[in-house]
Length: 157
Image (cartoon, rainbow, N blue to C red; front, side, top):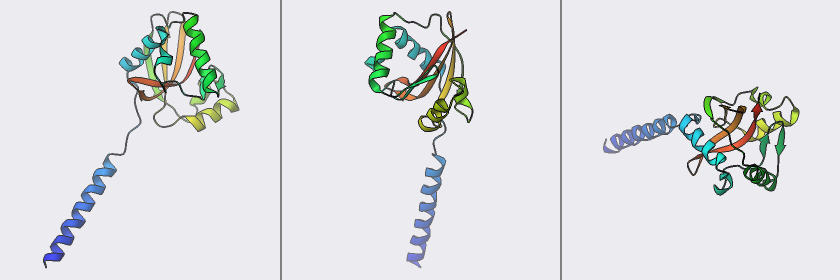
């Protein structure tokens, strides 16, 4: 009888642990305004390259895809040298990537393939309004306190 009680307690404990793990299935990561604006400040200060892993390759840039880490690094270096800034940036929205999201960057096979291979449930298209127009950022889970940037498009006027 004692072993039957132990077996029942073990089975109940196992079921409880399994239910606990099932309930911990992670929900898609949601971009928050303060984190996005913190990233914009980093971009405006030309310090993106200081945060390792923040802008991995491949990287969606407007209608193109940068496949080499060196190309992505050169892009951010050139923006810094040009004193690029998203002036008066205002967070508009963040939408999780869906089946047709790739079309906001480019209605092309290359962009469709990029989104299929390199984005997931934690990727969002974030819309910013600035003095120069609208920017779209393709953002993922945070790296060292900043949303990881998988793509940039803009300004769109």
